[in-house]
Length: 259
Image 1 (cartoon, rainbow, N blue to C red):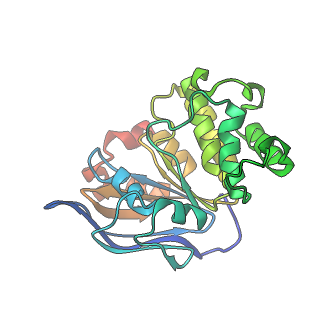
Image 2: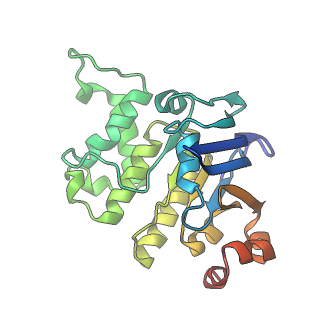
């Protein structure tokens, strides 16, 4: 596992979670436990409800019914900023950065809030040594220290995705949600991204939605398979690979490709 500590303790729990848009059910009674310190992947076909599930967990969508618990506390219905302050951060499928700000400034924005700095016209953030040091440390982690002064908008696609991961971890969250972090990457870029994700999730809890089965089977401690808004299986990668129901519902030849 990525992290250690509380073997068997639960970081994130979904209980009988439902989400309907009008009369259309998207999430249909999901029960899921993500253990503290593990890397847990959610996979499933297009339209299975994976991004909707992330939006429910992070507070972007309100659930129709059910419960979401973070480190034992009920966070159901809380707004995103309140959930973030309780230790959960997420990235998005579409890169979400400040294109005109420098790489350094992008990461520092997340760091400042986590360290308790609030907007005040008399404060000069350049003098916030603790924020600067943490920002520099994150830039080293995501291999963008040499690009610290570049506008984020001129980075390559893979670099922008790395920067977004840096912004996601800037607040020091214990639970990290990554939504298809390697989408659109070449094989070599994907390998670098996986190595980055391993580094930044060490000692933390990771929940990841990912379409690339080689990434999933190489990175995850456990995998949950979501089909038509329901979890049909949760198990270790070898067990999921061998699960006949999972292969029939989703994986098929993708399992062989992941070897």
